[in-house]
Length: 243
Image (cartoon, rainbow, N blue to C red; front, side, top):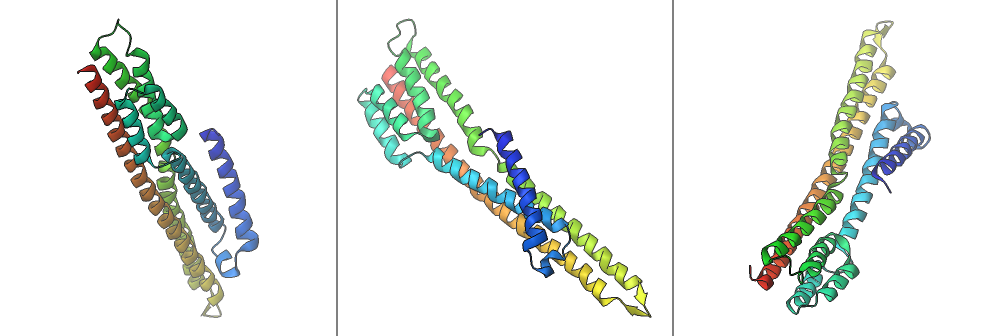
């Protein structure tokens, strides 16, 4: 699914879900937070959607089996000169690491017997293939991370807006007295609106920031694994070419 289509569907579903939950499913004391609460619920739904998407994407990027076991198998095949077997192992494993390594092995397998290229050019071609594959895979791993941090930031400001509106209503109640007595009901509604929006904004921010940091850590680990695997493959190929 294209990123724009996914985002549009998630946005529409989130807004609709946020309104339905606020209008029909929330208890009265939370509904008193006002219409802005529906926006906070929508942001929470979006966060959940992005978290699920990132989790599934990174799970697929990891491949079908242990990356360490797969890489050890590929290195053994490369050492024995079984390039076709190494490519087949990458096809079976799938995932980001396998895709990047496969690109390099496939390119080297195509040029290793080309007498028109010297050893240095063959190594350069292999490195270029790995770099090109890396440039395609890494953005997929990092996609939607900015969305998580952005929603966390916007939710905080959104909650603060609701807090401000609620406090305005509360202070307005103290300024309009009935027979010299403060309208306690309006005062309570204003304070309740402020606190509900504050809690909602903070809840979204906590979920968004924690999810962002968790996924950034996972992506960094992936990138390290990819760099390490690419380096090992290149060193092996350079050894074969005597570079």
